[in-house]
Image 1 (cartoon, rainbow, N blue to C red):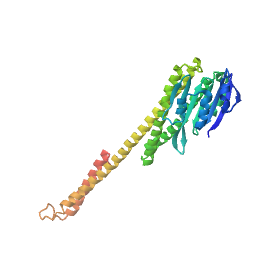
Image 2 (image 1 turned 90 degrees about the horizontal axis):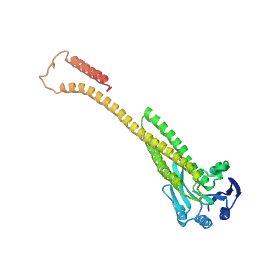
Image 3 (image 1 turned 90 degrees about the vertical axis):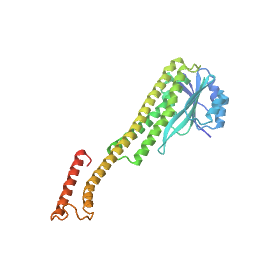
Image 4 (image 1 turned 60 degrees about the vertical axis):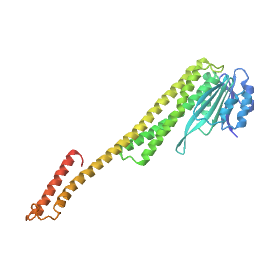
Length: 323
């Protein structure tokens, strides 16, 4: 059984009274009145009840009973059906809560399928602006869509802060598996946010073009404002995705550079150690006729030669930056 978050009738920019679901159609039929119903996780029976009252199109109800992959706007005669998504963090994982919006002459209905930010805040804002609420259903529709887009901003800011922190770790320390996995996860979250935000641009454009009895032409600038907010959000998310990708690339390059430094040091010390090994190997071949083999100071001479050679190699590698 779903939960009725709020159901009320409005006229002249003010709340007239709270109503039950069964009273909606009667109030919506009164001139100058409209009903605003908010549901949470409604079941099929409740949606069919609303369909009978407000003559909702059967395809809209069918869509509302299904899960969708992206936001969309559908028109059914003089009514609208909109699918939107709000992002939330659930145990550290990014999830999207689907909301269906039915809008027509005399009514606006929202059906939220999950626990996201409550639309009660939208109702409070609208009731605090009676002059705009006097426009009716179209202003409420604008306020809901604007609220949906607002929910993406704090999520984007939180991800931005996490990416900045990881970027500092990458630049100051060694790139570890945890940082790589978290960066990839944040980048994936940003791309998912973009996937759900992008269709809202098209929805804003369509609302500016559509001609419906309950949408006043004077409200079109408000829907354009929604489109502008969506466009800015898309730009911010694109920048975040680029920052995450660049951070990963910089981390990989820095790690490769660190490994290259270590490899050069190993190579330099291997060359230094190879010199005395080569000299000792030559004099360990057990031949009789070898230079300085019977020289009294041969042993000390070879040690000195090895020492000079090793020091020369060390100085050369040090100068070239290998040590």
